[in-house]
Structure formats: structure tokens, C-alpha cells
Length: 115
Length: 106
Image 1 (cartoon, rainbow over the protein chains, first blue to last red):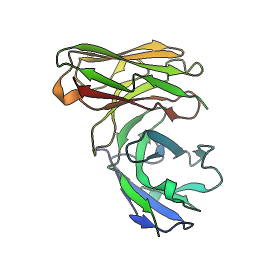
Image 2 (image 1 turned 180 degrees about the horizontal axis):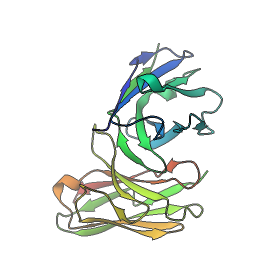
Image 3 (image 1 turned 30 degrees about the horizontal axis):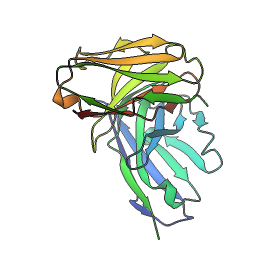
């Protein structure tokens, strides 16, 4: 069955770089797009960017300068790297599958930015 | 960016009621408007795609309507398990989410 699972550090220091991995199963990254979505505690959802099935990427303009999404199709993994983290980047980070909507989501990984 | 405005922010409901939640887009998104349910400490779950298309496994009491800039999610006979936050999301121009509507018990 289709599954996505995020992994990464729970705590990151301010000004450092966040690195997250989304490991997928049950589908191929060359057939489906995978997105990263963030949610601040008690707040709405924020689309960050996507890895298209052809390897291209798209980003929310709010993150363009410090966000990078990449993948390793052989390992069925999609990566998020975001630099210059600040306390306001604290939240839950999800990866999700889809094109214009998200039909499968990971469980999310909580990231706290604090010294 | 397309801004989605959801109303009301909070809706107090009685089990068995028929309710409607609104999502308004700042510009036309055609029918690229989708609805999600999120319960506490859970990931969002897709309820309705392309404004009105049902999703396998979602109870039939959930339905959607609209096109362009005005959309509605309806729940025909609210059940206690429906107490959640509901988000709309557009996929016509990049992707954005609304701010959500929280359903609570009256």
C-alpha cells in the first residue's frame, strides 16, 4: 500500500540547516509528485514545494531563497533542505503525494528550532 | 498567490445537523479546489477533490460544490467523529490552503 514517512532531527539550532527525508513505498517517484507541507502548531497548512515526477521542482516563493528539494529514486526518497532556520520555522513537516491535491500524507515530523 | 478565505472560523454544531462550510478564492481556481479533514495529532485526510468529486472510503454525508471562486463543503447529518478542522486547498496556481474551519459541539 502507499506509504510516506518523514524522518529527520527533532531539534535544530537557529541559523542552522534543516534536513528531512521522505521515504515512500507503494508507488514510484517517477510516476507521482511528492510535496512538502508545513504546519505551525495550531495553525493552518503551508505548501513549501514539490518534486515533480520528471525530477523538476517548484517552490513557494516564501521559501525560494533557502529551500531545496531533491530525490534519490533508487532509494524512493525525497529530501528537503532549508537553511537559515529561525524559531518561526518550528512546526510539523509533512510530505504528501499528489498533483493538484494530496491523496496520501506522511505522519509528519515535529521540528523545533531552538538553541 | 491565490488566497483562500474560509468561513466561519469556528462552527458550533449539534449532531444530526446539516451544515455548510465556505471557501472563497481571491481569483478563479476553476474546480481545482479540494477539501481535507484534520483531527488532532493526525495528518490531513482528503475528503473531496475537484470541488465535488467524492473520494473512496469517505462517508457519503460529505459533499462539495462550487466553481470559480466560491465553494462549499456540506455535511449532511454531522456525527461526533466529524469534529475536526476542515481545510480547503487550491491547485490551480501553485498550491495554497485556507485557514481552516473548526467544528465543535454546541
